[in-house]
Amino acid sequence: MWNKLKKIFTAEKEVEDITSDNAIATILVRAAKTDNEYTESEQTLIDNLLSNQLNITLEEAQILRIKGEGLEAEINDNVQLTRIIKQDIPYEEREMLIEQLWSVVLDDDYRTPEENKFMRVLTHLFGISDVNSAKARSRVLAKK
Image (cartoon, rainbow, N blue to C red; front, side):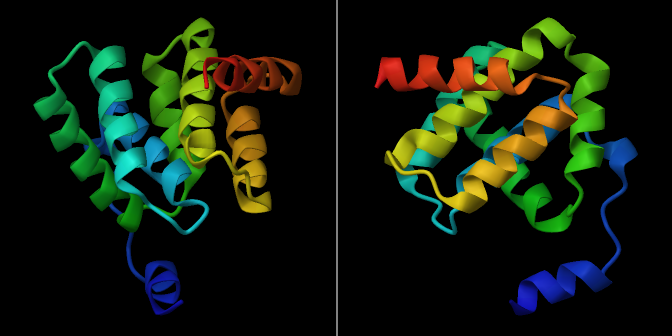
């Protein structure tokens, strides 16, 4: 709780310095932390997602995830992060990002109300319909 209060009253990182890759890593980390558990399995999944999506090595993906962990602690506003992502990621590819977010949320085979709320907000911010988000979630569940 102290950290949340501290974040409210401290200045946030300048968003000009954040790339869309950093913003994606940050959003993925935030999805993993939404249920207040950030497991090694989720970290590995994020590394694999970043590596595949950005066509980088696992080591580079791990570095990007670690940077995302730092940014997640510094930036409160999902709107800023999604705005950065939307500048570089075309609409057609954002549904894939929603699917990746669902895979992180569903990694532990359990959805909390906080995770559902987080996904509703992100889906809306990315301009993806609830129907397409549900389809993305179904694709993730079918792979499990």
